[in-house]
Structure formats: structure tokens, C-alpha cells
Amino acid sequence: MLSAALLAASTLIATTGLASADDAKDCTDGVAMIKAEIAKAPPKSTLDKLNKALRGAQRELGEKEYDECLDFVRDAQKAVKK
Image (tube, rainbow, N blue to C red):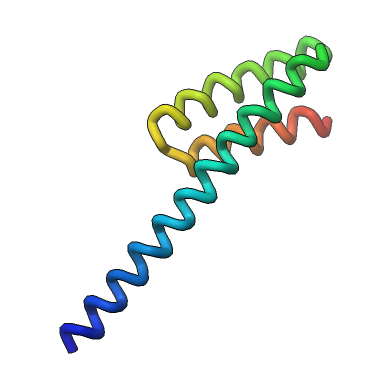
């Protein structure tokens, strides 16, 4: 019984670590995408949204809060699509 619980716990930890690594890469890629969109000189309203998303994404990347970083990346993607 104990070995089954340990196996389940180690599997969960390993899976969480992999997901976190993927999220970290996605976050870093998202920050790069936001910077590229800003470099295209979008309209002011879009630029304001992108700058806000970039600040938030960079802050969360620094804090290693990748899920929150990805929220800002999605906000930037929405701003570009409008």
C-alpha cells in the first residue's frame, strides 16, 4: 500500500515538473511574441494592451508563475486579433 502511494506521488511530481518546464518555455516564447508585435508599431489602443501584457508576463516569468504569465500572453494574443 505504501509503495503504491509513493509511486503515485512520484509520478505526480514528475508530471508537474514536465508541465512546468513546458509552461516556462511557452511563457518565454509568449514574451518574445509580445515584443515582436510591439515592434510592428500597432495602433495606440493595441500597443497599450500589449505593453500591459508584456509587463505582466515578464513579472510573472521572473516570479516563475508560468500559468499567470500565460494569462498575460493570451491577453496579448486577443489584443492583436482585434
